[in-house]
Amino acid sequence: MSRLPKKERQSRLLEKIKEDPFLTDEILAEKFNVSIQTIRLDRLELGIPEVRQRTKNLAEKAYSQVRSLQSREIIGELVDLNLGHDAISLMEAQSEMALSNTGIIRGHYIFAQANSLAVSLVDSEVVLTGSANVYYHRPVKVGERLIAKAKVREKRKNSFVIDVETRIEDDKVFSGVFIVFALNPKDMEV
Image (tube, rainbow, N blue to C red; front, side):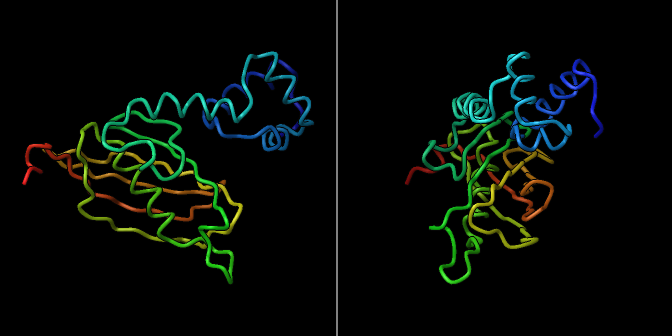
């Protein structure tokens, strides 16, 4: 993107952050071909918090809506949730998640992020995964930031078909279709 006049750059900056609130100042500076300091000044002038605060604000709102899981049961950080529609979570790939000899993250961590995101979308006290058809598109390495997005494709009586896609920046690393069921807690009694 070539250099834009300040007003136009700020207008586009607002649009970009609205589309993807997880963009860092460094990434935005690169996209707009300006310095990081210019982006910071634009954000301050527009009243846009830095990425950590934007993420925290989104997470607080999202966690307050989840009924199907306790916050400690959600793998990754839930940052956006529209019950029955779509959700987003973030997860930093850490060394304790990796195979010791390669630094590649074990697949069950990536699956767990996607599965807990799918379950969190359903507005019910008890939600269980019935099936999952998943694909790992490329290995994930320690230090990479996974952004999982889930969307309800279809709602039946008490079941939901949910698509989940996990990316690292523009690179798709995981995708899956989950079928989850909302159950009545009384049906669970033994």
